[in-house]
Length: 240
Image (cartoon, rainbow, N blue to C red):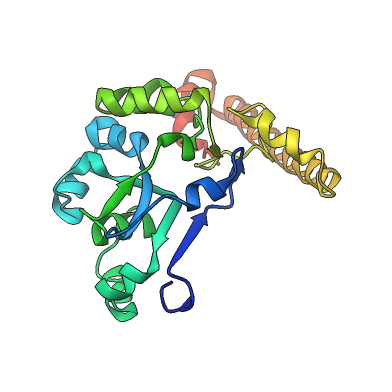
């Protein structure tokens, strides 16, 4: 990135699965003097580390080897100090480090390791991750340290940037957390009808998969009986 944009000393990076509700010029004006970047703390990953994902703690301690694992940041919103990056790392050093391990969270893990101790932490309102599959809020974030838990829930009350992080996306699941915010803006774009068409097309495909699965279940009952089907059904079904 520093070499791709040689004429810029600072840039703002945003993931594409976001709704921006506040002028990002305000964010861009944040000072990152002496730091490599500015980002928001990640309450979700802290919850994974504290037990929700069994291997995350071992991976963080033994592979990432972060000195302060609860200062892990979410890389969807980054204010990058390119001038400082150029002074600290060459592109080759960054690329060599990127392929040195089998990183679980790819660029996010890489940046957390490379930038450790040189990060300015932003107000979490600038990167509010939505609930995911009904478990991020109810099961994962409650495991995070209390201060991160409170910061997350406070930021949800007035999100500056809504981040649809995870496999669920509002353009396919409008009833999801903060899905109404996405569609409020989608209605005012020339792509509204296209998004509706693609959402309905996907739902039709999923319905076809469900019908195919149910036919298989009924055939299993017919061939082997109800008790056999109940016993082995979880192993026969594949979640997509």
